[in-house]
Image 1: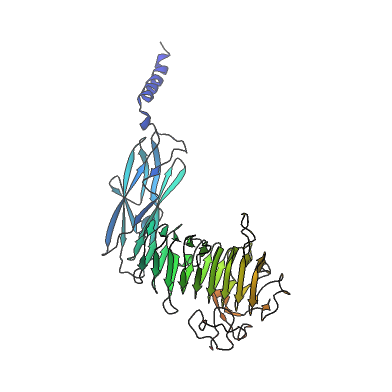
Image 2: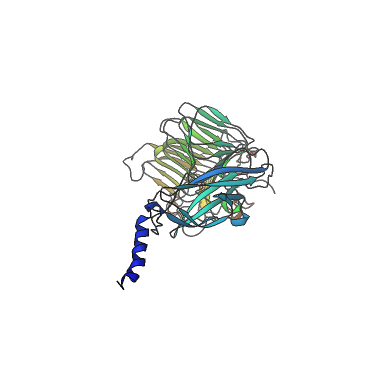
Length: 456
């Protein structure tokens, strides 16, 4: 009997534990994490007045046992434009919150924005952090600080995107076969992460030298201006026909423009600036592409690639690789009658490369031009960096391995210095009388590249 006084408390404890429902027993298993009603809380309401807008986030414990959430916090803490109300308590941080098995709770999220404040970032972002059993999870908070037209995931028919309000691609937008998407001069398109503009119909971009169309990632803070890979880019699909992209700035993409529409007419890209692409500026597969007065720079793979045959014209364009954070393993300009790692090979391939610059800095990229397979080529009056073809292409007005002398590559200024070898050495081409800025080209002695030199 004397031992019962020691055993009795233990028996009472075991009895109590055995009576505790599983959904109230707190587990410390690091695999026991939370799930949410969404990975992003998006405030895409048109903000007509200054004030608070509230959204609701559901937090769910999918486990049989309870979990203890060590803390729920706003990443931006007290400086965040967002506010959290958790279990009726408004606070940027809540500690040691228990959530029973298979149970849930709601968090109210508020944001204060003023749409009339033009200095407000286009994107007002933060995140909610959840720490559970040593694991951190997060839910993004995204609000747009200016009035905009939002395009969600889906397919569209014939329509026009006007200038004025910015257009925001929240996800994949497909232009249906037979439909035309017209983008008016001066329009601004901002793309969410992983967003892509797919074109199975026709894309008509109507920018002008004075009122350019812009495509970019949605982050407008300074550190993101030059950052590649923020959205997927523009893809011309197999059934798409006769696309025209004029005077557009396309940046922050994985691939600027990807084209794969064999036999469906020429895609014209004129007066464009394609920059800060994680992979390719322009890449085409067995397609017909004409590029005129276009600047391509800051790419991680091809500046221009035409693979698997096709008909390619690159006229009065500048493809440059300077001050690039991305380390390339490929030449800047590639034409081939095959597509690597596929059965597509020996395809008819034509190239017309005239009055263009393909150049880079440093000792690593000494061969910026690669022509592989059976190619019918007309290559004249260009400035090219190439050891491989230094004897073969050093004819027809081409200048090999001669610095084109851009004005200020550190500031992405690829216009021409006074002493540039491209000055007055281009071949006049009928129908191309202006440069990328709309400046008249010299009638008899124009300049090589996208920019006609002007007197300072």
